[in-house]
Length: 236
Ligand code: ADP
Ligand code: UDP
Image (cartoon, rainbow, N blue to C red; front, side, top):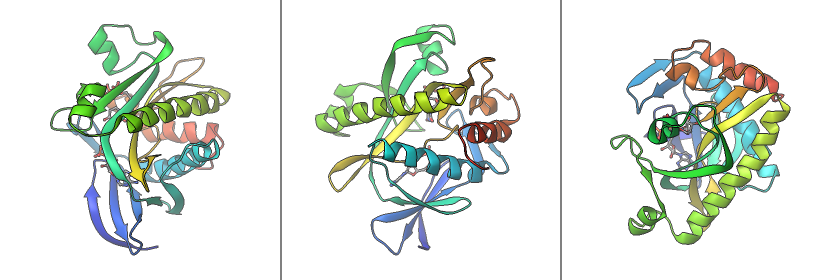
């Protein structure tokens, strides 16, 4: 399947139409951004690692009964996905406190959250992705009650599958962000699951192996993504 025209140029990925109306090409670029695009850099091999990583995880999720947009890997940096009508909210589950929740609620990084928390954010760089609740989603018509319930259910189901997968590879799944869209009337997982959109710590040393390496200038960003990939059994 060939790319026809570029529909969206995101901060880390580009989306292309194809000759098939309901399929897209998702291109994983080396561009890396943080703080709503305020810090950007090109990190060699990141696009390739994330494309392979995302394909592997999406297949694991699909096998566990979670509907995803992923169809197949096209080449090093590109995958074919179903074209979704994206819901403009981000779904975040946290198993351990880190990042924005520490600033917002004054809790210590590393605090175990039991039970895990769930948060919705409005996807808007200009507004810095503000946290929202179900009433906002309902009032602004971003998603129906059924769709919200489905997003929450699927996001927690992803937690069950991936906490175990990463734990078996010696890592803690601290938190992650998911995006969903509509396909033929159903809520389907879209976008990506990669170390760009989650936090993963080594179980023993608590070493950060995710995008916090870039955010916090810790170095070896792609090397750590590759280590995570290898630990879960991916050849990169
Ligand atoms: P950002 O939106 O943060 O700049 P990306 O660089 O990852 O992020 O851009 C990818 C874009 O593609 C996002 O707008 C995302 O919502 C969108 N997208 C991801 N998967 C699909 C899909 N299956 N169908 C339509 N759009 C998608
Ligand atoms: N996240 C993301 N994209 C966003 C915002 C958050 O992928 O636009 C991910 C982030 O990598 C982390 C989780 O969602 O794994 C929670 O992020 P948080 O709210 O702590 O924000 P941060 O401080 O990381 O910007």
